[in-house]
Image 1 (cartoon, helix red, strand yellow):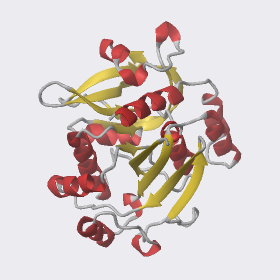
Image 2 (cartoon, rainbow, N blue to C red):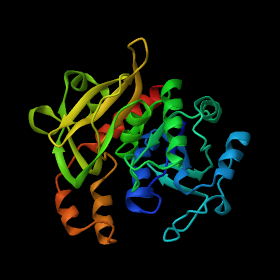
Image 3 (cartoon, one colour):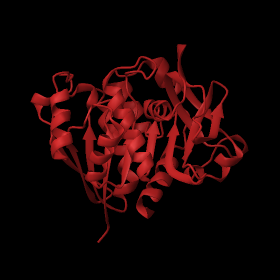
Amino acid sequence: MGAHTRVVLLDLLVERSEFGHGGNQEMVRPLADSGSVEVLLLTPQMQSHEAGERAQSEGEALLTEDDVPHWDDDFGFWQECELQMGGNPVTFRRIAMPLHGDDELTAQWFNGLGVDALYCGGSRRNVSIWEDWMEGCAALMRASVSSGTPTLGICFGHQLLCKALGATITRADSLSNGVWDLDLTAEGRSDRLFQARRTGADDSPVVLFTHKDHVVTVPDCCTLLGSTEHNPVTAVRVYDGGGNALPSWGVQFHPEAAKTRVERAFEWGHITEEEMDSFQREHDGAGILASFASVVLEN
């Protein structure tokens, strides 16, 4: 019998089926290669505060259509679905989360879920244009990190993690789309997140970007792992107060943007031809996700 893994995933691109639900599948695919996976999906950007209060009281509270007054009706609401991935069942289930932003209460709620990892992916919203629901997400990121739960912030998730830990986020005038080599620091070269696959120049990972917000300072509790010419704080790892590395990372790029997902997004009109052209180069995202999954499975 294989492993059973239970994770929380902030589903912030729910309205974009390929980069949203499809991207979620790519994130957890390496876990599914080792056994069944249960994914608890959070959509705080569409959820009511009343549902958040119920979650705080009940713990794992299923999300209903009545709980999501801001739902994007172009993507139909569903509460649960099951897929087969890697020969194993993967269940996606929507639950409510507290939105109050209180660190202690959020930690109580999160720890009560008993999950093995937390993922936070991309979003069409912006950390530089702060919204009230992001307070709950920032508290959730801090709760996950402080509990020692493996945590991976991707794009918006990277910015949110860094902001939650004290970094400054700024907004550029133009969108950065493309696939670039990641210039690793000495710490990045030895970090296990980047050990699986590095196909770029000088043994560097090749990674895919699409973003306007930029993390411009490294939180005091983090170490810089990598940067690019257009993005100075591209990958970080979190450390505890004693200087010990925690299993928590933020990456500005999109390791979940598999080529088939990008191609389908273009076919469905979710990205432009110019964006499609900028994403043609193969990248090393799958290896990075596999490295994170190995941490989750060992933890």
